[in-house]
Amino acid sequence: MDKFKKHKAETTESKNNLNKQPNINKKESSKINLKSLRNELKKAKENNLRYLAEIDNLTKRFDKEREDTFKYAVTEFANEIILVADNFVRVTESISLINKDDKDKVKPLIEGVDLIFKDFLKTLEKFEIKQIDCLGKKFDPNFHQAVSEEVNNDKEIGEIIKVVQTGYLIQDRLLRPTSVVVAKKEEDKKK
Image 1 (cartoon, helix red, strand yellow):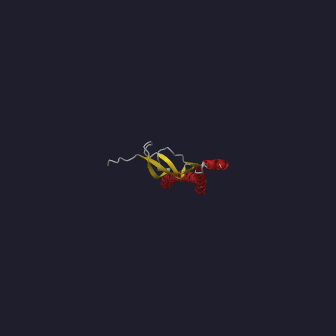
Image 2 (cartoon, helix red, strand yellow; image 1 turned 45 degrees about the vertical axis):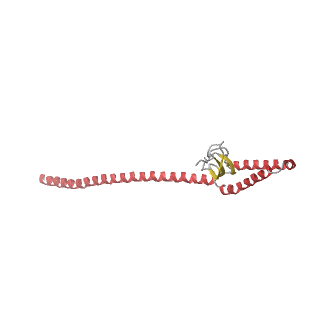
Image 3 (cartoon, one colour; image 1 turned 60 degrees about the vertical axis):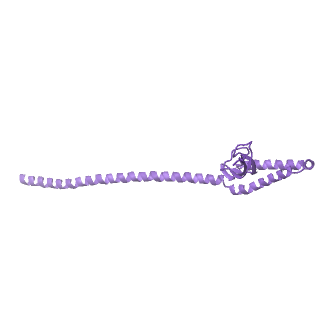
């Protein structure tokens, strides 16, 4: 009987050893799987963060484009409407050519045109369309277009001495550059 118990104990021990071997492999396999799953989870989290950042960037870009579209939607219209402003300037310049006696006769008309033009400019400003003020300032190719130079020793070289056509900004963007005449110094004739 002792032999039987001994044999049974050995058999049980062998079985346990056999069962332990796969358990060890199962544990190692589980550890490897767990490590692999953790790596996959880490990669998924990183990808998720990247996607969230990309979505955030796209949202910001879309919002900026939408804002710019709204801001500058009137650009085409503004390009056309400033031609009306040019006509007001021409009328005003033409009125200045009328002799004094005739000016007195049309004074109410002159004042009316002047008021309409001022109201027109105020309306443009409501839509952030503004004239570029540049007379007496230094020429800036970002806002001005030089149509000619004139000798003027009293002014700095490159100073704007005459506006040929008024330029306009819409918001902070150039709608049309101001056409200007800039000062230059008289050249030495000794050369």
